[in-house]
Image (cartoon, rainbow, N blue to C red; front, side):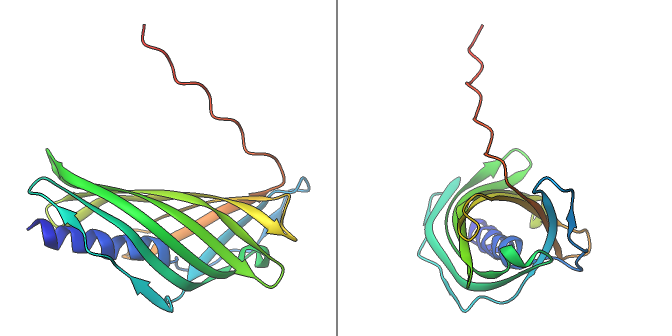
Length: 182
């Protein structure tokens, strides 16, 4: 039972990352270095899935590699080949199962690269996913050195995924300090 859900979680995660999204909208620039984009993805050149560690109530999988996924965005600066390495932890919840995954991402093209991290959450009721979202933050390198790309991947409701984001020429905001206990 858990193995099927974990396999489904891995496939959905792959879908979140490489499922791309349907359609694309035109790039818009607001004049201050912010550009909205949508993106679609193709099939990876290779996927390496290590053996997972599991108990009856939780599981872990580390080092999944998704290699050379075509990442085609409406903003050509962030288009290129995407490679991801990720880790995941999951467990049984009161309503089903949930998985949290962290990724290192890199998108390369002839003018530079984008490198950063993403976090995904997936929740299941039975075999059906009820929550699937990914947030990625990538810093530009080379020609894109002063830029940061933020994007999200989420289901579109029709079995496909939407990828949309913004490229900004401002620094990332600092993380606030945790709120202390009262």
